[in-house]
Length: 264
Image 1: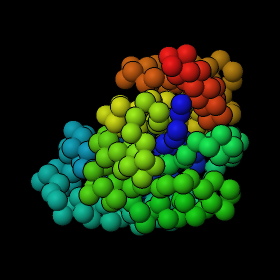
Image 2: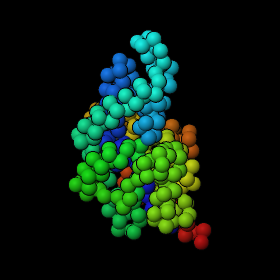
Image 3: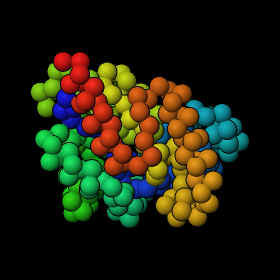
Image 4: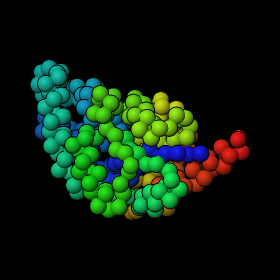
């Protein structure tokens, strides 16, 4: 039986489109004179933010821009400066963008009703998560356990360390009794490395990369095409399941529980 569900935050349960970190990354790098595209940012979305800054600084276009501007490649002090700017910006934007996605409370209440524990992992720091967690709790979403990479000696995604800590805290020995759901490929990789069931969510995801307004403005055929594009990305990394919206998770849980019952 499914004993626990582990959710991501931005793009999965809050912040439709995972917009806050994108805006904060752009601002921090622009302060350093570097222009970033959404694609530059989103390809490693979900990692611990210090690691994510490092990945962006390794991009060829970013290194080229940096060398043109400073006549040298970025060093660790540059990384620290950008990370500090990013943190400051994100802490500001989180207050604005922490809004529950549609269906989150309904799903959360279903899990509580059936005694399924709820935890979260994230690429955010503990300081960032305090803002997000408190705002979500005001709106009725309060997971049993909120874990950051700071709780596991900085071992962020795709390391399984955060999920393994959750398993110990919940006293769950079999990873097959756990579902990890997220909106990025690194969410899926994290779950796979921990041996749990993985679910990719499409609408409002970082992979979709659109705000609620932008998605709603698309016609039906464009919406279907965008959804299918994201589904193919999740399928390409062998996510166990891909769902359009978060309440579809209920069907996955019921399917898995029924399958487990048959095996026993």
